[in-house]
Amino acid sequence: MAVAGALSVSLAGCSSTGGKRAEDARKAAVAQGRAAVNTPRWTFAMITHSGDGDTFWDIVQSGAKQAAVKDNINFLYSHDDDAQQQAQLVDAAVDKKVDGIIVTLAKPDAMKASVARAEKAGIPVITVNSGSEQSKAFGALTHIGQDETIAGEAVGDELNKRGKKKALCVLHEQGNVGHEQRCDGVAKTFHGTTQKLYVNGTNMPDVQSAIEAKLQADKSVDAVVTLGAPYADTAVKAKDDAGSKAEVDTFDLNAQVAASLKNGTLGFAVDQQPYLQGYEAVDLLWAYKYNGDVLGGGKPVLTGPQIITKDQAATLAAYTERGTR
Image (cartoon, rainbow, N blue to C red; front, side, top):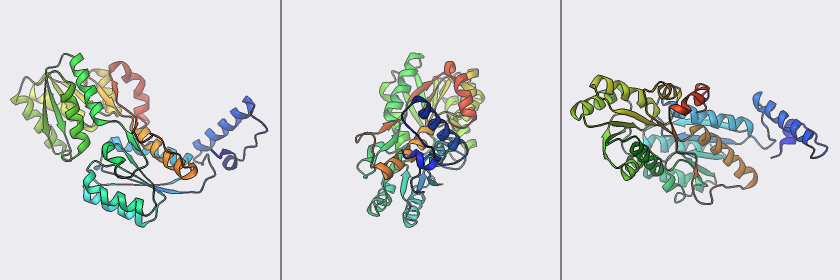
């Protein structure tokens, strides 16, 4: 990296003292909101399928924004949980002639034409979070995230270790290919029975009532798996109101999930490290623009899954409170 120009640091050699001074200066610059490089101020746009109020995407943005400061990037963020609207946001970024686009492919068919339009305009694209199987075919530089099927399989394995027999997999966004892959992955490795429950993720009271009704109707369900951190607490409330003894487990992590793991309200969580998804997406776009670098070798750059239990919750609590896990 061309750190010297941005920080005005003169290095007389490669001594350990000189290297330490340069690193200290770089860290100070980032802490003060100044770039650690002297590359042009490129504009990168991130467009996701997030709905309003989803804390997962706050964490993704936290990573992206910190990388943007370091890399001297003008970072733009927009989102829409309607696939057609999300595609229009990508088109708008292309019309603005941004220097790079980061996009999710939760509903890839709806996004294909817009991604192709970006690439035709010479704008490099990186996909994050969802759409790992379509990313390469769509022409993206790389995909950053977890393999959703592998993550689901990890959940199935963990449920087996806990002796569970019947799992309810709660899908809060119909049509999201990543969510289907998660539940299918659970079913693949879980020795018990897996059932899917589709709910309206934009309406938490409806989510709670749907889970509660299912648990009341089927007392044999001993595990509820939610696919997003904001839904875990709702599932716990539904379980309690239903008088169920099922364990609630969840994909993704936030401060509430960490606290619930610590006090035993939740069994375990699957962390895909969204901070890294945002940070690495911006950083890799910068590296491509600056040096033609691409990571992954045609394969996704995996940020998960990591199974988090009560044992790790206390350590991670500080990170979740500052919005980076």
